[in-house]
Structure formats: structure tokens, C-alpha cells
Length: 65
Image (cartoon, rainbow, N blue to C red; front, side):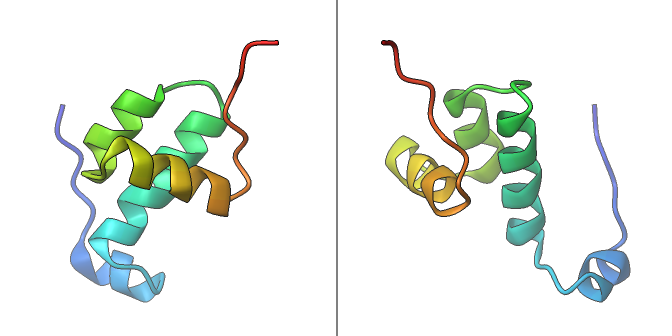
């Protein structure tokens, strides 16, 4: 699937393409729709970088008890 959002819309929101991808990935992760691995692919970040992003955004990583 391909999703197209006009550059003008993204700019009007005050975001870059990378910002939008990160916002989307964090939201999907918070809702349990994607894994860390999928978030890495979507954002083009390493696992450590994506986990740091999740931490910065207050999206807790699930840890086994």
C-alpha cells in the first residue's frame, strides 16, 4: 500500500516527512498496532534509536514481569 500526503499539508502542520513518520510510528506503537521492529522500518531508525524515541515520547516499552 502506498499513502500519499501532499508536502504542503505536512509543511502546514509544521512537520517534516521524518517527523510525520515518527509521529505515526509512535501512535501506532502506543495503540499496540506495530512492534518495535515495524516502528524501526517505518521511521528508518535503528532499534536503539526507535526505543529512545518511544522513551522520549513517554510510550512505555512492554517488559515481561
